[in-house]
Length: 308
Ligand code: RUB
Image: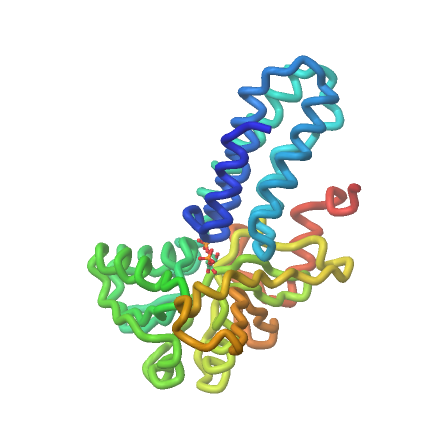
């Protein structure tokens, strides 16, 4: 297997490349590069190698279905390729197409999400989502006077990336620690977060702490919006598959020696927010109610869902 595929998988695993959209694009690009540079001369061997690449890439982070969907999009139509050259060309152009569509989806979401924001709004966001940040930046670019609270997002502190990005745009931004969310919610008008996976029931899998924020927003009657490209919809959940919640190394939480060895550490890095706490999902095909996810999946994916 190509070094580039291994390296990409490693970079996704160690979070050098992170965020559900970015890892999907990186996974698809690695597949495309592999196909373009494949030096073998058998179609069957090529397909077998591609499967191995796909397994290595998709297992690098288990929660974000975006990665699985991005990698698999590159192999669409492969069974009808008759020659090796045709197959290589197909995977490579599928990969380019996915990267293009994925980047365009963020732009569409940014525009549609910004329409939900009005001048004077205070927004809260969690972690570091390109889609959610895109919405906030677009509202600011439209001249809307907005304020943003961004959570730190322990333990990785992706909130630092978020506040840097927002401050660079000149947006009035306040960094808060995760446990301050309930304190500030009385001043918040809307919450915008990203997504790693959306289930067929409209539940959201996103950075740990998202579900607490949704609950607090619900209690305070603050609108809770999810910004999600439709390739983050998980068709496997239609058939009852559960989404795996990634647990990461405990030394991300405390340094070695900081606490006794007898103390256990639990470090799940994503959680599940039920559809009931989500007002709307802003997608590349429109703003939808979480109850409509299944219908959108069927419309988007059609019979492909039921392929092997
Ligand atoms: C990032 C995270 C983001 C989603 C969506 O987690 O939870 O909210 O991935 O991001 P991590 P985007 O830092 O562990 O990858 O909108 O950029 O796809």
